[in-house]
Length: 506
Image 1 (tube, rainbow, N blue to C red):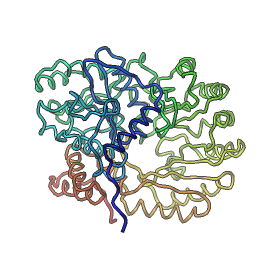
Image 2: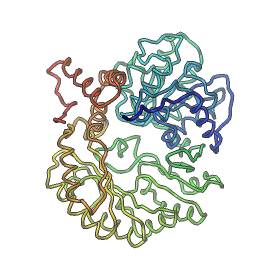
Image 3: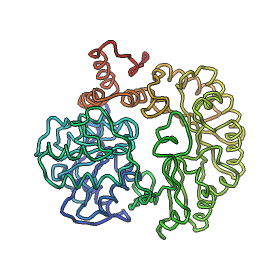
Image 4: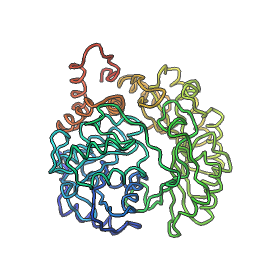
């Protein structure tokens, strides 16, 4: 019989934290009268690869009178939330209760469980209604707020919606005044783009747009222990000029794409940074991206880029990527067929993907990795078969890997409200893909079950957030989530459409 996983003990966790701190480059050392805890509900490796999290860290520490310390989901708790130890900060190894404010950056729906487990393990009642003036204020922000932060509402005093680097100090200024809680929340509710559930109910404010002077974001800390190991992260642009119907960061969000000049990007990179990560929703759409990558390669740096679009990956661009250390060319197929890609308003066409494969081969890259969604509205087996045939043809040019995610409709997109295809149906489509591509392409997919959980939360509200708390306390397994979500449906008014569950037999 397998032994139970060992719990994180104070001694081994303390040693791990000290080793990580020793290896960090760029950490900001500061003492100030008002010190808050900045938490990330995933392990350190993920948190320190989040440009948004590091941007807020820098914004707080650059402001007069403020300091912050970092806390993360304990490493042992990533696979089993019940192993989460008492959360402590990296800088002083103090608990949440030692701070007047605990602020969380939440990237996506499945991190809500980690957020709740950290609160509960940190002796802060997760439910806002169960806290009083002895407890820290609990804030939230992060990428999730661009879409649907309502499941966080029962647990937070305030949520910063959208781009928060220009907002966080306004919020902290109110909190440090030390007014009674009701007066503090009332004052926070007056700040534009700050959602205070106690005052606003379920009416979300508009998404904040940071002043252009605050762009680009860049991460002060580099560490070998991050997912993006020893990489200096900065953004080349903010937002996107495209109209992809499934994406929260489409053209209509905050006025589209704001481009950072090449000279500013290059001037921000430290001389000793050997690895550079260029981050954004549409990095490959920067008009001088090839020149930027070639310049960094000429300086002997390795370069990683997010969000490469296949219609932009010319021979010159792929050549620059190869010079900068790329071994696998990664881009998005998006949908399994040309018809579905067109329905998503994507520019990725067969000719672009074929050119990507040819350029990867010509520049002797190891393989071409393509991301796509399945379970899209109107998808049929014929679309899956087209994907099999086309991927098999590409595999004759260069080795192919497919990274597949089930489609989850998100709020604030044109596809908001569309149903989840169903767990059984998604798994059937995956099996059809795997059978058709066996021996010809590597096919890896995220779990259909957990994609359904993500979908329910993406489309849900406070009730779904409360269900996460129930599921987390019941072990945080899929069966616990399913039971909690189905209980919501049984108690809801039957006049409400059952669009959230859309769960097929498992």
